[in-house]
Image 1 (cartoon, rainbow, N blue to C red):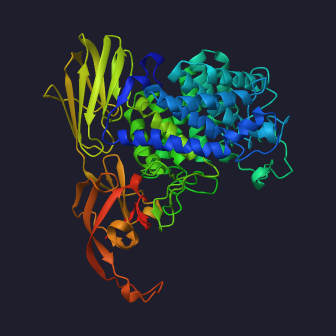
Image 2: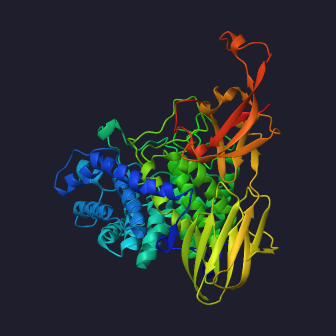
Image 3: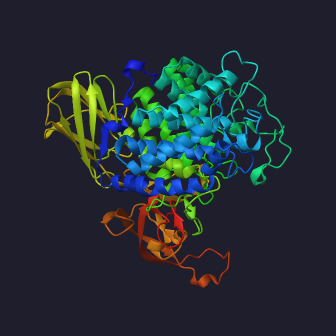
Length: 633
């Protein structure tokens, strides 16, 4: 598939034009709004926001937190702005306005804004862009400002962001080519494209293109200095001659890269920015590079949960098929970043396979990052646990909670997309969407119990007949589906991941889509050694796991026969309501081992029942072991 022409690219339906009313998602979005965002605001008040106050008050020193602490406030502002786009919440609006006033008051007269540098190294701006994350924080400020402007129509935060962006352009932009600078943590690239789209100022797109293309073009990060003194937190940031530039995707020019490398979150943000640049400039070569990287990631370096970045050493990708379970890092932010990137690839191609990957990351790798009550979070998401890995209320490096909050708060923008005369249903979420098509305004009302149930109904509302094509995504896990319009079966083939119906639509028309929703026994590639001889269970988009709470023994002692029947059962009292999977498994008896580590092979087994629950919901009960990949018989 080639890069679509701009006029043919599907664009997301605005958040303000989508109202979600869904049995699976509504409670989660309410929890995100009422619990997670409020909890995060309280956490910011303890460490992050005081930094802005100290700068506002003209003080130096006393910085609290990581050098990129500012970004947590910006991601919180972005999440809160998405809420304000769809909900009247005067209390939240007041808090948002107060934080914006605080941020604006901390900005220097020339537009510069970074409380870490302003408090601890005044006068030493842009001296170590590999490690000190000034451009990373600037990017999150810009994203928050764009979200706030779109939600409220106000410019209070957008003016702060454009002033900072203009300062960055004066430092790094056209005419400053003697300063070859690739920021250590990508983010500014995608943010500048967002700013270009809101303002129409070409200089922001030019600067985003520069930051994408400069990466990997020098043998080192120019413009760095050694900070020989200990910095707050006991960290030493310095230029090292043996620094691995692949960690920040700077080992070679992006267009020459064939495998996803380095820090997984940084990679996702870079690829998002590169996709945006490719789309705006029509750069087919850059787009083809991204497709190659996507294939490498999804076929060789991604967990069945959609998690990416397999090791804690650098929070990074490693080698093909190196996907350990118990030590899996799979940072929540990386899964969120994968969602961001895959939506962009869909918007450039119209292909459903990117939403398949997005959906896998959303329902599993990302959603597992927050507890059911919305106040505790996973930073890393292993696929096996000895019972000691638990969510916590906050982190010293607190990037994941507000990152997940902004994704969930903006979920409405992921459900539908349109071109001039086409409408896409990309996620199956009970909702109502207002679409403006060339033929007239259309309302789509979606009713479904997805992911628990296999049926989706989309009702069409319109005052006048509208000629349009409706595309409904058929997920990768679905081997068979049936489609009908107004009760009449429609025989249409899946094309690019969609069933498409082209017709003249009238008010009251209804499309019904039924999926084959089997319980799948998933096996891994033989070279993924940690999953060898094991099976994972999946139903619809949900990957399942076995917790000790449901089997009474460590999951490692189970032996599942992949051919034995497994039944799906709704349990309203389990984990806020889930479809659980019940089956029979052999259990290896250990009473006669006498605490020995090894013995001659002789295995005694009993037959026991087991229950598997969705991976996103694990560790919400008593402590116990967990496994996604369970040994086979």
